[in-house]
Image 1 (cartoon, one colour):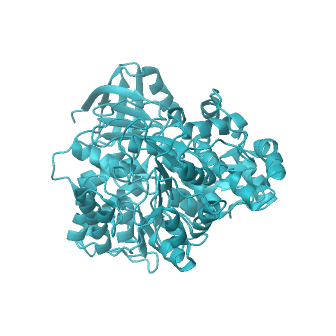
Image 2 (cartoon, helix red, strand yellow):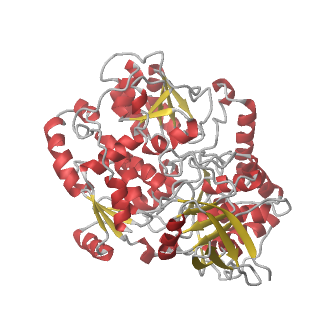
Image 3 (cartoon, one colour):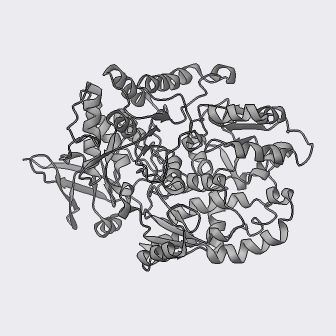
Length: 625
């Protein structure tokens, strides 16, 4: 056969990127302000990155890039990334009658990926010397290097769909199920699976609206008589379904967003619309095989609940729910749930946190004022970076007086933005890392892959998330509920508001997102009224990763500053909103709501926060490879 030849400019980085919040699907520009490729354009380039990372919505961005003609010609990965592949597979399976350009995607492994670094941004010719199915790939870079690999999108699946109960082969009941099976088969093959297993529940992340491609995909599943086979919940969509008009949301955006939601409801999904499905009744139990999308939910279910799910891509999620099966790969397998790197925060916590906690936290007011809650999103973000795609065992948090589910929720969400692994273990905190014998076995399994967390590391994580600090302390909007608020967080907010009788500053908007189920509980407990009386606007059905435009988001100007206590939103917010994002504790959020300004970092757990110009974080990442 005649080889396919791709020629283009190489964009190389040794740092993975989340396509969602990291790349603009409308033009291909890298918008993640923390990424080395920020400001570059991937359109028609040969993108070389270790893997994707962060959000499961990266597959949605990939589909939109393909349909809009703004994607790269090829993506060369270090590691197989099923999220990026899923967007391309959906483009091929559901839009194959349209003239669209789909990038070649291959994964070359750690050693061969390092060879690509030498080429920087040179013009590189990639020749694909293919067999009959275009599966085998030879990458030649200006005649200097030759790398053999596989075209992941051309791999042919040998997986069969076998029902987990009676062992009989399943026959598709609709055209939608047939297409969904093909998608699950192909992604299973790309992921290295040899069999498929049944799931007990699904959570669909793909319900967000980021472009016409996602809407058309969902509506096509409905037209082809698709129905989910397992209990299925829905993630946040792109607007409050009931109050969009009252909030002043653009009618076109609201119509498209609600149309996506309507399509998934027609497929048999539950009316949930929350990014925190673990707050709903009937959450999964330890050992359950499930299919959950949404990065924070994936990390929480694996790490805190002990359920088993890969970080499944948008669109794969609904396909798996339609067939009721997933590939038996990754962290579905007990052996693959072992940690392979130790992140040791013991010395940092002992030296810099515990003395201040014991000295300063003497009553309830000091607990809130301490800002110790900020440690969890900052450390989650840092741990995702330091783990570099591996499952980490995190040491030291069991020294703290308490670690709540809400603390872990914040940690999981931030970890999910920078980590590509769907799981972490926290010694004597998470269910699979309990007891000295288990922990010692995990440490031995990790070998010499170990990172000591320093004060400078944590300060650098905090200052990176507090990216809008240089723009000043005046605050336009306080953004709470990323992920969605729990009932416990509603109570914490009320307690902090009640520390004094100052009213909310009229110039500051305070908006919190939460699920309908949580707000119903808040209604019964009187929490909803107390928050609304203070001036908090409560939104359902959507969350901050989807609230991208006025009137919710301040109009883009140098003085528009958003304060959040979410490490996830602090990471994605600058690129998504083009606004200055400040990062502070829940106490600081309410103080800013009252004063109009963000206060300083004082008290236990916060006085160690100072500006450092070190680069400890990146040094650690390079060291452990």
